[in-house]
Image (cartoon, rainbow, N blue to C red):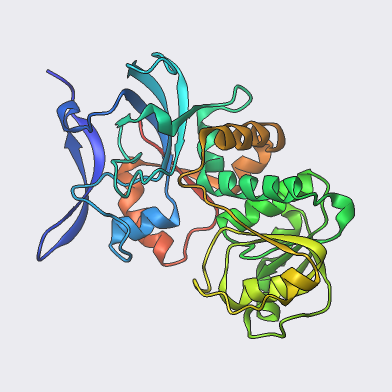
Length: 330
């Protein structure tokens, strides 16, 4: 007889939406070709929406939330992985359409998994998590479009968020000069400690602006969208590049074609959910060389599965800063 598996499970019926810490059996797990012991997961904003029911994140019920995880393979029918391998998962609808990481065990499709780089530990992989991975994809996109430290200032919006703070850190590690845009100027010292050379208020960018503005930035990483992204495009230098990876202000883009046809700027979309495996491996290998252990320890805290539901409520109330790593085996 198999041992019960501790898991956070979300259920919904006509009258009730609930998230509970409960136990499931091995036979309850999805029929996928790789079984793992989940070592660590994280508590992301999307997980907070799913657990609290404050956003329509979950597509099927019952659902184990957790959009990323790291674990040790216990059984595999894939030629790519064997028992004992450490693997990372980010995205692919896990925690939304497929059972995710906030459990002691998971069953996953091998196409969704990549190896944990040798230079980082499983815990460090989740201290980085989807936020760091998305930021790295954005930085790589800037570099592949020819943006270098000598090109000029790079803007990061949503600077206090997970993606924004990682983007500042990674850009600084690579020698870029970074301007951070935030609605919380009281966090300026924190952002400068991450590597921002200057901090501006998000209101400089968040209101309707002219279609073509003074050239300010060589590149930008934007997690905000809407008027902010439109103003970034209008403020890029000739040949500038902005990556779009979020929509905190809105899904709309009230911009004109002027920056694109008069200054040759580029807008690059960043999707972390369905990204091809080769791109994932490239991003994680680069993260493993750039991110220092002391930085990860400063920006993260650790909880257990028993504490996930309470912390999801705190996260949605804006009472948590930094990365929340979930130890799924303790």
